[in-house]
Amino acid sequence: MSTPTRPLTPGTLSRRSVLQGLTALGVGASLFGAAGCESAVSQANASGAAGTPQRGGTIKAGIAQDVIPGNFLTNSNTGITVIIGLAYDFLIRYPNDKVEPTPALATAWRLAEDGRSLTLDLRDDVTFHSGRPFTSKDVEFSIKTYADPLWTAQLRSTAAAITSFDTGEAHTITLGFEHPLGNVFDLLDTVPILDSESIDELRTGAKFIGTGPFQVSGWKPNTSIGFTRNERYWVPERPYADAVDVTIIPDPKALLAALKSGQVQFANGLSSLDVENLTKGDDFTKIRLEGAEKQLYVGSNVTAKPLDDVRVRQAIAYAVDKDRVVSDVVRGAGYTASLPWPRYSAAFDEAANATYARDVTKAKTLLAEVGTIPTLPLTYQTGPLQEALAAIVQSNLADIGITVELDPVDGAQFVKQLIGAQFKGLWIAIHSWAQYTPSTLTVSAYPFNAHKNASRFESRDYVAAADAAWEIPDGASAEAVAAYRTVSEQLLDEVFLAEIAIYWEQWASSSALQGAGYTKRSELLLTDAYLTTA
Image 1: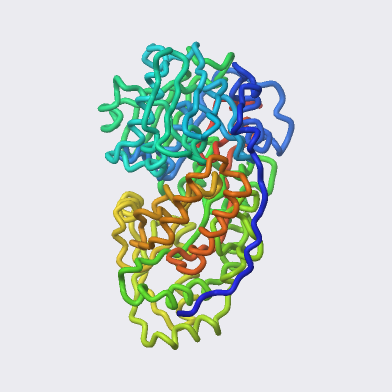
Image 2: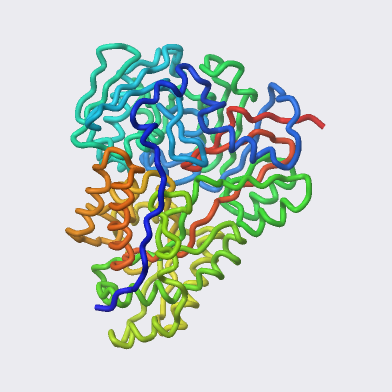
């Protein structure tokens, strides 16, 4: 077996002080100051002075994908992320540029010395859109629902490792763990607080009831999602807008036209080239989602021949022209990668990240050892980014003697195949979760989950490495960094997923919209957003 050669020098990042007692972060601190939206809002307003926020009006947005209620906790499309970002709240919030928890519905917390339990103090002034008060019972319900296999949530294994809930007090909860969870704050930043009284209607899309700044006023499948201001929202004077109207516009050209004509003031679903061209003047603003990095990759079903041979997978990794992908597909908004970790991650290593630099000769040599390679299907989700990436990958693999047959599918079908590990051969996709504590990726994300993944890759060593990293109480400690090194070695050696690039998604808004932000999961935030007048 041929294996790549690479040095691995662990990075450093410490948040032990965060894990050992965070009451000092400020009981009752506003979510929209210290708690993670500030950098996003600053960036959204970077094109000019925002001026004084103005109240009222209806923000109009266009997105490319509709919500799929049954996938509500999968974080798998823009319809879902828009509803969660506008209508739901979380226990803690990560700033976009750090993996450090700050207060949201939880105001303070205390992690036990052995890392086996966490006590959270909760806000006492929060109500659901229905008017029902938020209590510790709702935290228990939300985490248990997230852990339910019915919802196929990506951090389900972490939620399931919370085995006890002390809800004796209405606004304090103690979570007990099966074992130390180095990524528990990732979970608390991810699980939306759900309403137990309407959970069945959430499953069908009849109701979306949260505690967030806007409440869902109506959903017309494949057409629109309406939101109105939550008059009881717990952040004073927020949100500024009276309403948000979201239109589903799958065609990128139609979405671009809607933004240019003023039909919408925000667009998520444009190509990087369109965003680049659109924002050259002063009329439109680019929102680059730094801190919410995503990754482009080629996946392999390792049970399908010849992809069961690691040499073929390594050859594919060497074949892809990553520099071209960064320059042409994401228009320079990213950097090449052999591992999923962004530069600020505790697991990032610059030398290891360059392991699979383009090397056509090495790729051909590996394939020569294998023999004739049959035509392979290459599945991808329709959309401007994926279509451009598919064309480059198809051309690059042809350069080394691999013929691929393009297999475009719609978003719902693609997610079904990803979750169900149903790809016939190769696929290209976007993944996330590496912007969090590194252990989250390998025990959670559909493509990477060591226990069950989209590649059908099974390895006792990979499971052991992923679980060992996950169970270290301080996910940024030196011990954890060493564990991530072992995980990275597994990913590079087996390359069942060939990373291509880490990139920043880019949204566009008109200059009439100020203050739009985002979470580390790319959920749209309009709590601080407002419309300017001419």
